[in-house]
Amino acid sequence: MLSPTVLPADWPVLIVDLKDWFFTIPLHPDDRPKFAFTVPTINNAKPAQRYQWRVLPQGMRNSPRLCQWYVARALSGVRKQFPDAHVYHYMDDILVAMPPQEELLRLQPQLLNALHSHGLQVAPEKVQQQPPWKYLGVKILEWTIPHPEVQFVQSVKTLNDAQKLVGVITWLRPYLGLTTAQLSPLFELLKGDTDLKSPRELTPEAQKVLEEVQQAVSACQVYRIEPSIDATVFITTPDLHPTGIIGHWNDDWSDPLHVLEWVFLPHQPHKTATALLELIVHLIIKRRQCCLQLMGADPSKIILPVQREEFDWSYANNVSLQNALEGFSGQITYHLPSHKLLQVAKNTQFSLQPKNSQEPVQGPTIFTDGSGKTGKAIVTWQDGSEWQVLEGHEDGSAQLVDLKAAVMAFEKFSQEPFNLIMDSAYVADIAQRLGCSVLKEVSNPALFDLLKALWYAIQAGAHPYYVLHVRSHTNLPGFVAEGNARADNLANPEWVAPQPDVLAQAKASHGFFHQNAHTLQKQFQLTATEACEIV
Image (tube, rainbow, N blue to C red; front, side, top):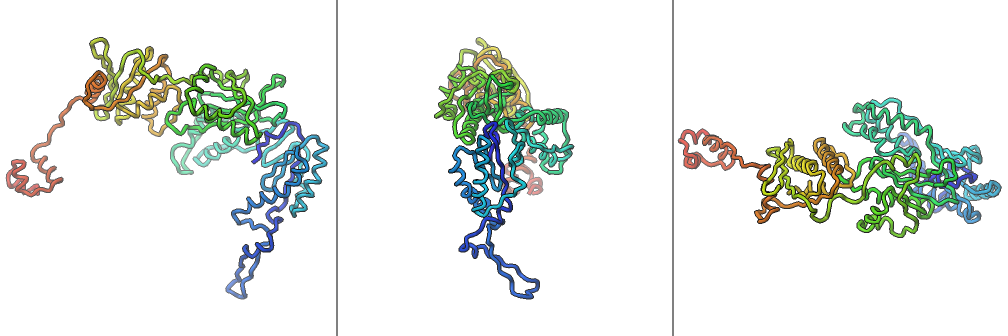
């Protein structure tokens, strides 16, 4: 579908609507028998009537595609005769933009004749020659594209109401520029009970967001493209949610930033911890693809909200970023200009360089472990000749307790570099990736709380750290195995479960092995009566 923002600003527009176009596209006589159908009579009162479609049948799956092809063929002559005109068509709606107005008036009869020669009928009352034009539900003005007219759900009482509300707002986002973080309270309404009639209500936070949306709807618009100015891609990171803008920048305008289109990433990343650089790379790829699709060329400039040194380091060390910028001949700059739409992103501080080191750092070596049985979360390290221990508690699985131990370690050693050794592969992987990542909300509240605590603890640290995963119970010599075994023993102290009495042991054994009475009597030193009662 056409994006109306790529219509050059101040170009006159002509919009034509085809009338009953399905029924005006004839089928070839040789093809008509293939579309025969029968109309039966009541109670077989007379022979059934046989008919053939003479025009394109609406029920056929390929009919829309054939319609598109047929109208495109009808318009091909106009496109050749007026190569500078922008001719768009989608189904039965045709839009032509061409300067000046006199040339467009000269094109109009040629267009109508081309359509009529192919048997296509134009609805005269739907020919639009003056602004405001309306195309595919979007109003088009000489310079701008106002937001579409929509009706919001007035009250939210069920999941169905919430879905309708969020769906409309999502459709409007390219015009409004509302970030994922801003809309998050509304997205939360879609979670929970999956029954469409399940109760929902607007929280105070969601109500505030809805008011912001309504204000944005009344004020926001996007612009038509200015052919004399190259397109620029602005990458912003409000609240660490990367957002892209395709627009024009001209200091001579009253509003120097003319937004052509906003683009947003999904509300939740696909992975539990997604590197911020990975999201920015994905946004760069999407914006370059969008510019190529809409304008046939790369943007002239990409502006990133990072320091030059960080970008150079990321480009040298990240293959994904290298692939995203492959073949890009435009300019990359690193300072967002001063504008109200970009100011929030400028206030968000972050770094693309990961805090975790790929090599051991100069600092203490910390061992952590946790036990789901005892709930003990252990952090231990050697201070001189003495071993120090920090103990915490967390109810739940071993995974949760291991996460708790990692949180304790990062909080304890936030002011110095350190090496962290653990036998949990999951926690080791998460700890290495959370340094400059965006955290996805998970369905387990206890797990998400610990992941958030670990994320905040890592962000608060001012020094690099190194994480090493080791396998437990290896009985290897050396300091690493000794420290890991010490943490493991502290989390899982030796404990002997109370043994059941002899009679209970015999019953349990018989329930599993089905021994006879004589065997039970000899094995557990029972009397004959006791053994027979068990059997």
